[in-house]
Length: 121
Length: 480
Image 1: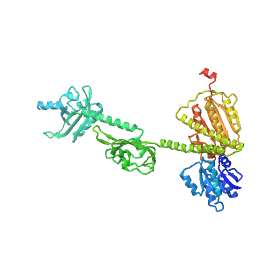
Image 2: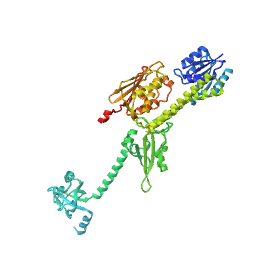
Image 3: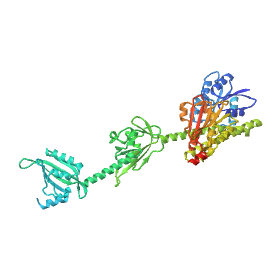
Image 4: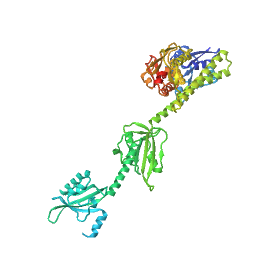
């Protein structure tokens, strides 16, 4: 089974992502804040992370930057989730090393396609 | 003396006199008493002084005394002639007569017309100055070349420059900046454009600022207009500046509302869009379908509440909320509320026995209690109890909601009831919300002649209390 991590402080969003990706192929890990996301990513080395930007404690940008700058975790593909779609945020996401960006509201179908693309590639 | 000269003097209202300082005698060669308003010509200075208005007498006396010592005489004074006050001017000079004695010679002329015209101008000027001083906006008046002619007191206060320092200076003595904070060039300033175009000019929006003498930046809205006289000649320009700090703040609050509301909309929309797409496109187990539909329903309710809150705020602010005050049984309503929250949280109810009905709008009271209790639920741990108390305080009932939650800092508490205020803390952000609930609650309480306040400490929970007038009992009604 391939490991995926979803980090979002809102349970409803996590459950949406979980329900979207739920299959025998994926093991889905969940974190409700930035610190826990970092901890899980380091311990479990998921292949792909869906990472909310606005989380309590460490922000998604911070988690992304930290993981991408560490050779141990740099290979984890990261998709940032955010409610803010301003250009400045996109820039900050790219600068933090994110592989892709999804703005809320997002379509589960496109999220699934994204997951499949990343995991194939 | 010829008769012609006499007539000429009479006709022009001029009298000639000679004054002998050694004996105080006055001699009027060809004057009747009419000019001085007397029946007889005064033969001494003292006699003439008696004809003068009492207030002016010392001045005239001093002037004659000084001129008698050598020099010129020029003094204005009033006399009562033919039942009305007339202004007279006396001029004279000390000369030496044929035998070497000093003699003061001079004339008196009627200057009433001139004085009245001057007075009218003074009054009209005074009127204009009074109008300028009472305009609550800042006013700068310039000549056609753009040099300042005058400032009103508001402009003095706003700019920090005094009228004395600025009169004669170019109108751009205070710097102005555009929306990008770039200095506005002299020829682009409103008053310059108004003078050039020959028509009024106004700035738009709240983005322009002026810089005061102390370097304070003040957002201003500016109008300027050329001033023409009756013949259409340009007399100068007038510029009116209004401090729009308040409007700009309101504008910024509205912009932040749009961003807050769109953020608040996105989460439920994500749920509704996402889960409905899942239900429609994926073969889900009945359990999963149920869960998806539950999320959709909860999110739709959240959206409905948001819309409801926004409408309430709009109603409150336009003054369209009218409470229908009736005696409301407080304990009954409080019990209902406790029941509403039963499945989410235990709310301990404590009502003073025999607490009478309050004079309130029942729907509003329910909304207030619902807001306060749901806040207590939202901002405290799931296992922490909440208490709802009711007690009488004189002619008021005091209702309070206490939680053992996160509490607030003093600074947060001070802004708590402001529209769109959200504490800048993760735990608050996570709980979601638009910053409208307590703003609405406070207004609802005040509409019912009550007050609301909070006691809180960071990490120690909060107690929100509000008062409502107790409904008059039958006895008090009969007594009043």
